[in-house]
Image (cartoon, rainbow over all chains, first blue to last red; front, top):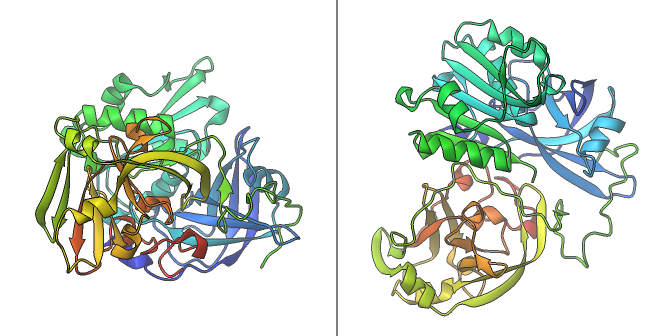
Length: 245
Length: 202
């Protein structure tokens, strides 16, 4: 049982920012050195910020790196009206300390032992937990079929573009990116929003019984999950994670 | 504790007279949606609500029968474990006291709410009765949207909102505790937001 491994007290830990890199116009990748123990790809952590007067704010972020990697990485999208994300993207820098606890969540997870096929469907920064799954798939030498359908606004908004291109070269991995707002000349990927027709074409069919993970904004996740069920995927194999909360 | 250099935070006045539990923020007019899987759509003519004793059905209401039960208007603050809180949410529903009193279960000490899609959540009877929990079928004056748990959901506002199971179809009265979906996946068994009982061990 996946859940059994995490039935222990989650204490706040101090993490050091080892790298702080702007990945796209709106998203930053923050790499943290922290002794958290092994996490499962798909799990998240809570970040806690403390102001000098003691005021605190907490938010959850998916872990974007595999447990086999050296750092625990987050993909943080800057929400202009947010309380925490502008601090993480604009103020935080390499060498700073930050508090976090986790790993949290035992449902929206995939590890090599669960096998395949696996269909991942991401909207925007919802790709973060899938980056962890892809890295783990490689590090573990998994032969499970892993297919990612990833919706981004424009080419500049594709998170971890270079790594995704590298993953796409690996046996058993498919990376399918669709751009919803603008596509450059010569773009070889898909164009347009993820809808029922695109899902029918791009997703591992229900007859092959994939485990399906959907992560993104609420409207994206609702629409995708609904269409998948209509296309014959059993509701119980479609796992969802939403942000915007 | 690590002070986050340059972090001010903007909601220090936002606890609204002590109504914001520790670690939460006021989400304002938005109503975020969280669920672990696809939204089920059970037609009302196939919907029913069952109270079980152990695994045995002891009372059952069709949608129309449920509508005819006395409803209460509830205005409460709700608190999601993912950190948002929403003040003054308005619901209408049937008190769990009324539903549980419809059966005779002197052994009952715990309640499991079970939902379409297989979701479950557990409550001690003391958290489910005494005017603290409802099965609600209306939100803000209208029918409850499917993505917010319609046609009907549990409402247990004094605990984190995962206890307020969406798409609820029944209650199971038990003489022992049976941790539900999130409660077996690392989340706290009771989930009191004022004690910040988010995760197992908190």
